[in-house]
Length: 276
Ligand SMILES: [Fe+2]
Image 1 (cartoon, rainbow, N blue to C red):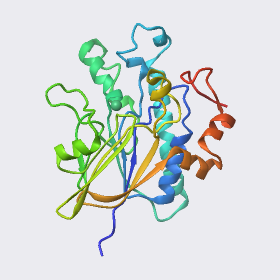
Image 2: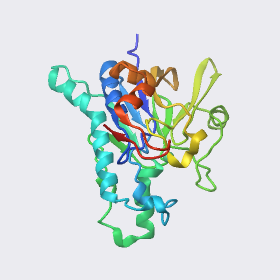
Image 3: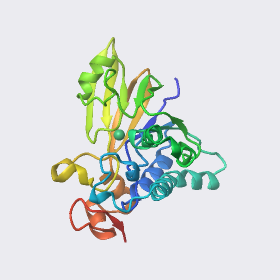
Image 4: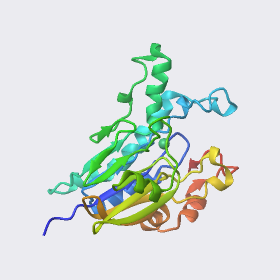
């Protein structure tokens, strides 16, 4: 029997100053517990609000700094990696999974800014993202792993804008299993083709905080990671693991209780979060 291959997918973690990062440690610990063969981060980990074109000139843009964005993203990414590092320090048999990071549009903001402001060349760079020993792929590049196409987001070939169609419709169009982040939803579609399963998966939220721009209703969505058991030629058995489950597993309380007891609630649902 072939050795089964397991993937673990981490959707957009949107790390920035002032928001909780506890879930990155939970995911790191879960990775060590489950030891998947491949870990795929779907991108938009470095949120980079200081490079946001949408917010420039608005009141909320005040005080944003490139260095703060880089440092807070790097620190949060390190939390994810720390449990693997600690495990390998304590065990003779090392755990060295393949680790893949797919750049999202938020990381890509550096390239967008440089195109418009070439005088910043040498001042800001993708090299500022401390991606440690992960394989890193550019924004919009599709990477196939065990028959699944992974990318931060699929785009319209004519406009370059991210697609927003449902997973099952995109599965029809692409004709192969795919997984993407970017959209803050969990949308999953399944098809059987010639006796093999094909899976369309869109999952773009893996963070605790609420995003101001999404408003009251937009922040009510699924947040978590996905484990894929027995991945072969694009077929697999999906397991959805939400942040509430991870919180109960590693903090002994629900995510709502954790927010109440361990985090400083913002005055409005959309303010900044702080960790007590
Ligand atoms: Fe994105």
